[in-house]
Image 1 (cartoon, helix red, strand yellow):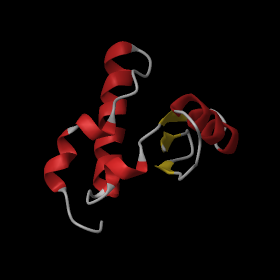
Image 2 (cartoon, helix red, strand yellow; image 1 turned 90 degrees about the horizontal axis):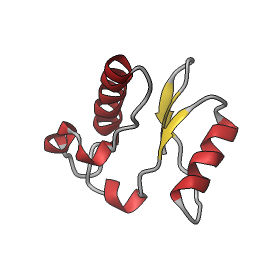
Image 3 (cartoon, rainbow, N blue to C red; image 1 turned 180 degrees about the vertical axis):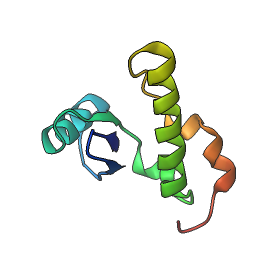
Length: 87
């Protein structure tokens, strides 16, 4: 899970049966969080911190442009060219 709160942002590993439940778990741990589920398998071989940074940038742009978060998918952002094995 990628998440963002007023206090910060990060990656929280959770296990759940579906995306909605994963978001609920993170929002329970991080009240008020904007969160996006990302399957762990899709992050293999990718720089997770770069993806998080790109996701934060896209989220900030979305909020400024649309007045509310249209939560971007970190796997479709530009950070994929920054892939590094084992990152």
